[in-house]
Amino acid sequence: MKITINVWRQADADAKGKLHSYQLDDVSDHMSFLEMLDVLNEQLFQAGEEPVAFDHDCREGICGACGIVINGVAHGPEVTTTCQLHMRSFKDGDSITIEPWRAKAFPVVKDLVVDRSAFDRIIAAGGYVSVNTGAAPEAHSVPVPKVDADRAFEAAACIGCGACVAACPNASGMLFTAAKITHLGLLPQGQPEREARVVDMLNQHDAEGFGGCTNIGECAAVCPKEIPLDVISQLNADLRTAAVSKKAS
Ligand code: FES
Image (tube, rainbow, N blue to C red; front, side, top):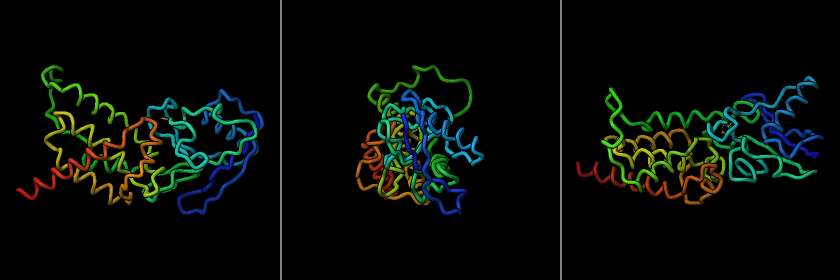
C-alpha cells in the first residue's frame, strides 16, 4: 500500500522542530510500524538524507524503549507498544502523523527520541527494596497471599515506556509511579521502606516536572500493559498512611 507519513524532525534538543512529509509506495500490511520506519530510513539513506531517529530495542513489547505518538495517540490505534503495532492497522492512501512523546519531563533529544531518564530518577528515589545479601531464601519461607501476588504482578508488568505521560493532558507520571509503589508495597519484602518510598518517589516525580493526576484516565487507556488506574488509589492510600505515621511520631 501507499502511505504518506508526516514525521517530526528535530536536529537536537535546542533546535526548532517541524513535520516533514514522506511518501512510501510499497508498504506491506505485514510490516510492524518500526519496520515501516526502517524502510523510510533506507529510502532516506539512499537519497543521502539523515535517517529519522527513533528509540527501540527488543521489538517484542518487553523493554519499553519504543514510543511514538501516532495520529495523536500514544503508541497509535491499538493498545500495544509501537513495536507491536502492524501496518495492517492502516489502509492504502492513509496519511500518518508521527511525533515524539510531548512532556516537559521528557525533552526531545532528536526527532522521535526523548530523554526518559526522569523515570530512572524516580526509581532511584525509592523503587527498590533493601535485602540482606546471601543465599536466596526458600520460596515458601515468605508466604504471599495469592490476591496480593496477582495484584503485585499486574503492577510489575509496567515497562516504563512513558505512554501514560504522553497521553495525559497534565503530562503526569502518576500511573508509572503508582505501578512501582503498588508492585513493591504489596510484597513482604517491600514493607520496611513502604512509607518512605511513596514520599520519596512522589517528591522526585514532582521535581522532574511531571503534572499532577486529575483522574482523567487517558494513561490507563493507552497503557500497553493495561496497568489499571486504581494503582493510583493504592499510591494515595500509602501516602495517607505515611502522613498519619509522620504526624503520630
Ligand atoms: S522496542 Fe521494546 S517494547 Fe518496543
